[in-house]
Image (cartoon, rainbow, N blue to C red; front, side):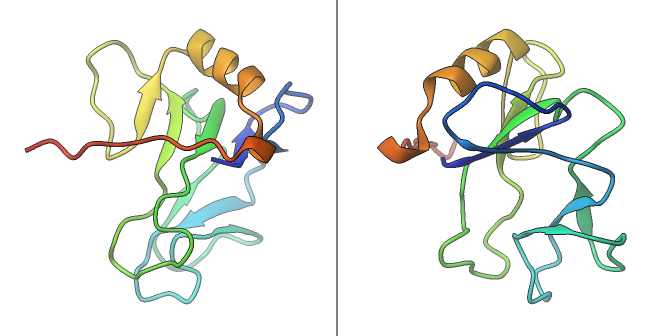
Length: 123
């Protein structure tokens, strides 16, 4: 984990942090040359995820870096640690935690230390 993003400037973290706008997207179209990549620009005509959502789920988020180096088409994209909807509420493949916990992690993590997260696939 080395990158983070959110809706606000000035978040205290030693990860590479960017405040996102309505022009920041994560491409999830596996046939695209930009698959599983963050792009900035006009709304893509291919399948994508908006990083500045209308809800608070990406108010603060950390890119887990799953399938980012190398990118293998169809192996999964846009896997983040982000603010949860609530205890016990599922995600579409991400890791979700309470906002206060996520802020603590953002302050604690240091990209220079090469932090990782281990995910176990459920049976």
